[in-house]
Image (tube, rainbow, N blue to C red):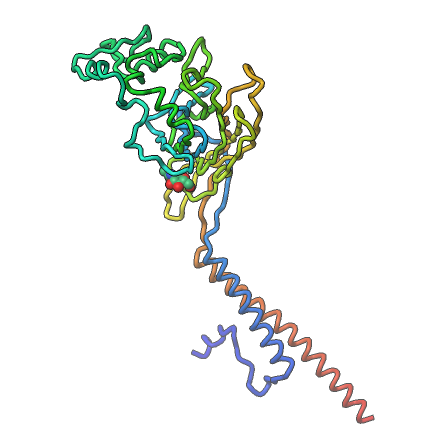
Length: 381
Ligand SMILES: *[C@@H]1O[C@H](CO)[C@@H](O)[C@H](O)[C@H]1NC(C)=O
């Protein structure tokens, strides 16, 4: 037992040799205060989850890019607005309507009750024509267009319009077609002229550079050119592409990020204005502490706008998004300091400060003692 005691590294000096001084107490209190502050900041540091970014080359291949859009065009009616996607791989998606939802907005910006007269619905017209269309064997003419239906019928105005577009013709005289007269196509267009449109949903594109755009009129490919048919929409119509982008983000899952275009609003100074946004999309991977990985994308944007009033060749009025894909992948890893690190840091703080305080204290004590001795000597003399 006696020899085991030899291991005691914290041998206590005899109580008699310990001297308590005023300066010692000050240093102790001061160092205690510093320790408290440092421990608190260390604790806060330990509690917070840090995010460590790291960058590498994106090795993903053959992926699709998922784009979420929610935008409002207060002065473009829904029937006029189309969204098309084109990429350098040569893929076109014209007038996407399966994943994008359009909501008609009245001039005050409130949603229109859609149960009331959308284009393509029945409308009062010539009784004969209506009776004819009710016949189950009715087969409307396509006026030379390319019918989508294998039986060669165009039963609605929309069918005729699509048949014309398939053929690359412009649809410029709907009033001569019985289907369109029956549906009151021209009246509907006149009615909706002052409306706006909210469009929201998602599109999926190849992960290659490309563009998607909101532009007026149905679009189609003609001689390898992307053409928008603006006929049949009251001559001289104004295309006011004032818009608000509520949301434009890339990636399927929401990772709680502010996107640079969210909330951007533009007021067109004139009709026929063209807006272009150039986006650089960077892939990200978000690795959470639970081990869950969420792939997503971030982007930067520059913008450009110009007038297309100069006419043919000056461009198409609309809102264009050109995107480019960065070859880099940023991985954001969530990280929290382990408890062992926290404890180590606590020991380092407490031990370190006590040691430094001890050194200071002994200096002060020695200095005090020397001073006192000198003063005593002086008195004796
Ligand atoms: C689109 O954005 C508007 C304005 O922020 C919002 O009121 C609306 O709910 C959004 N639409 C969808 C489908 O999220």
